[in-house]
Length: 137
Image (cartoon, rainbow, N blue to C red):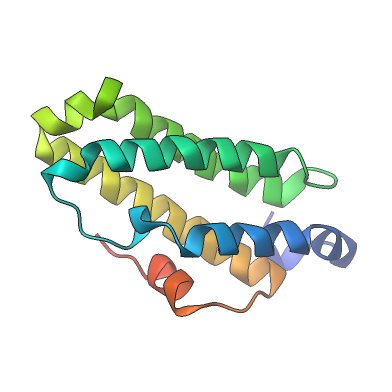
């Protein structure tokens, strides 16, 4: 299903959830800052926290469908990032290339999926969200 195929009632019923997601994401340093070695644990914790937030949002979606699928993909990306980091982000501390790879993958997934949410729900975009959507590795 594409954003253009969504039922207008579904969009109206779930628009607030999509708006709330953008508000939550626009202040996340994880998606906009450059990180140095001391930030591995911060990024791991931020992705773990975001995974929990996404799970809570998934429970509020009316009639599942498109938004649930996209949020599931976002949450999965967070879980993969956290798993790759390992306990206390030790894997990332030991291998900066691994850290950068997984951070770029996470940011790419969010860029694509958040762009789809914006399009599907016709949401206005702040400069922070536009930067997230425009991410290129």
